[in-house]
Length: 265
Image (cartoon, rainbow, N blue to C red; front, side, top):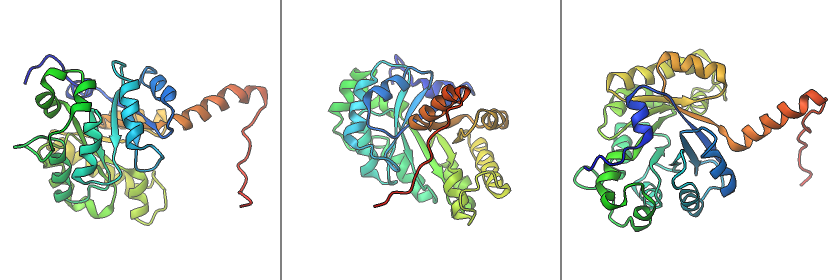
């Protein structure tokens, strides 16, 4: 393919440099555009756990065109049709949830490549209009779309080597929250069993030349995870970062956040 344009995320990962994505859960284009210039490398458009819709994804792609952070989307299911829709909206990466088997890893990888390498359908006129290399879209997309497989169930761990070995998977990401629940740990993301699973994901990714990822929960933890070899990070949501910034500003004045009260309805 024409090498005129290369995904900045792919380039950084190839150079063993970490990448951070701000999780976008609100439908505000102003917030997404501001996040795209705040220093993040990509936007994690959260379609699994938030009101973000396909229409929102397309609007974010247009609102952030030419800005530093690339739009990625976490689709709600690991199915070909879900990936096709966000790719045709113009995203530069697709994040697939609950990739617990090699078969699902193959679905994820195939959904993001045109034949003969995959099963993506032809119909990307919207994506072409907002892609950095529109004159060679099909080849450019095949070479640059980043495919992220999330391992977030204990049942996936025996298959993690096969998942990481799947051609077309670029990042193997451990979802520590859901992993903890699948182990009966109810959100204890720092539990030794969850960390052991994270080590398995990291080792498998390294064996097969893939990047490993995980949530970036605090700066201190993230520094240690980078030292371990993790490179692809989901940063907190824009709303969580706003709340943290508000507390940092107000706390010196003795102002504490209001306690959330249970609804009467």
